[in-house]
Length: 305
Image (cartoon, rainbow, N blue to C red; front, top):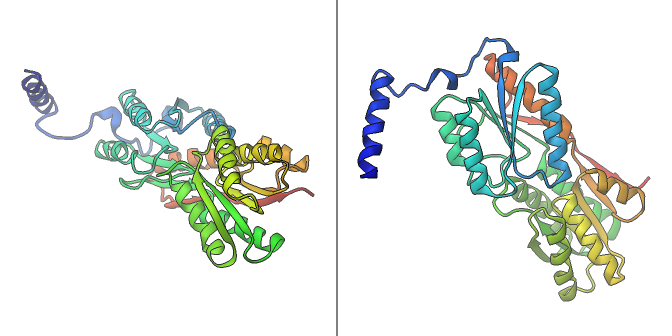
């Protein structure tokens, strides 16, 4: 019965739209309209991470500066929830989607849905594996991973024993930061252990405790973000060991820890700038301007001065 009803509803929709599959008017991008009419949908992987809070703040501040509306949703690191959230944003009639994917593969279906009805998609910090993305606004994650490994080699020498704490499996940032790190580490360092801690501080602590038991002579840790690095640092301090820890992001807690002489270093991004650049890319896309497929935000290695 349900299948029959769904079929009849589909036939009615096709009839109403003039027997075509054209998207509804609200879903069509306005290329030359007033930007103040632009409604942006922003889907963030998690607002339980200071980096993504800053990224969100960058989007909201830039959009408000230009008089645009932003609807923000928090996926809470749940790929299924994020897909539902983006579907809801589409139903709310957003003109452009800014998505920071929890999982680059899982988000592909809703990206393709947006593509099919003419809503441009811009991804932030992480890419989508499939679907048409107008632009990816992100730091060079591969380069950042290389920077971390190069610093370890410089400070500890060749074949130093190191551990890698990986981010959420499936996230492009996890793949890319790991790739960059291993571009150097596989030749110059001895990676004695690696495990996912999902970009989470508590998981970083727990995973590090376990890895320390099996690798008591480890000399350094590279974590794919600062939250895991700070969790790992807590585990290391509890063990009484002195181990180099390098994070990635440059969030406020990490910078304070570096200044206090605890965390060794971080590969610092500029999340607010990423958000600002994404909003400008959204405006450019809506106005029919040419937009770079990848819009980079600079990185820098931060250590205690």
